[in-house]
Image (cartoon, rainbow, N blue to C red; front, side, top):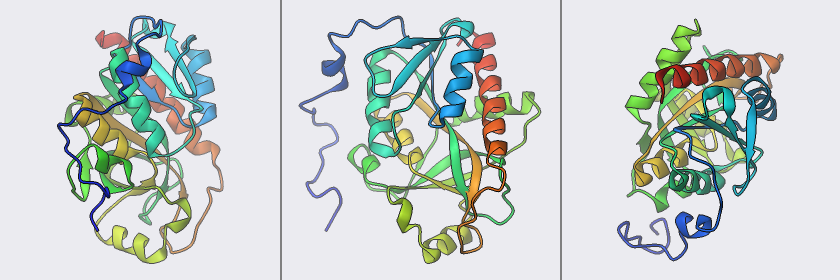
Amino acid sequence: MSYPNYPIDFDASPILTAALRLQNQKLPSAPTWLIFCPQASLLKHAVKRWRGKPVAGFFGETYLLAKSKNRVAVAGKFGVGAPVVAVLVEEFAVWGAANFVLLGVAGGLQPTLQTGDLVLADTAVRDEGTSHHYLPPAKTVAASTKLSAKLETAVHTAELSCHTGTTWTTDALYRETAVAVQHYQKIGVQTVEMEAAALFAVAQHCQVEASALLAVSDSLAHGVWQPAKEPHVATIQLIRAFDAIVQTATEAGE
């Protein structure tokens, strides 16, 4: 049986669209950048440090960052997983955002990765369902090379180091089996999380740019789950990376 169950015509028009849902929303001028902040602590920092102004009408919480000259917005408290990210990318793209960044935590798959290490995901394994409703069948989907290069420059300017590689996106947190982890380890996959593949696929569908910068939190690299001994380390790294990215977007006038 193929997936999705009903064959998709990718050129067909959906009945409900993001534009239709938002047509009566009174939204401010759109930012150029939209940063997804799944961790509550990162969202709190973003709103306080960059003077976030709430924007109603979207799932979770969305804020325009005044100190970025409203060029950057952040979204958080929307839950986890691919479907909600897909909905938000479509809606934020209709609003007018052009660059989408996922800035969150992920599980480490390689033994060399430590808590707090940053991984710039240039590719995502499509082991979730959402991306298959947006792109033809394929094992992986790529991030935007243009936007990824900007993120890499921003973190290096802030004297942060980061790895680059593939992330494994799955819908099933409690089905990350030892054999699957071993498989992805062998082919060099760096991390596991629940959103990146959908983000990249929907962005391609909407003809916008998307990338993901992930901080390693827990580890599955040794066949057992190892929670982070110092989880705040990943949060600190995300905050430093966030500030660097917003600063870059603000100074570049993008």
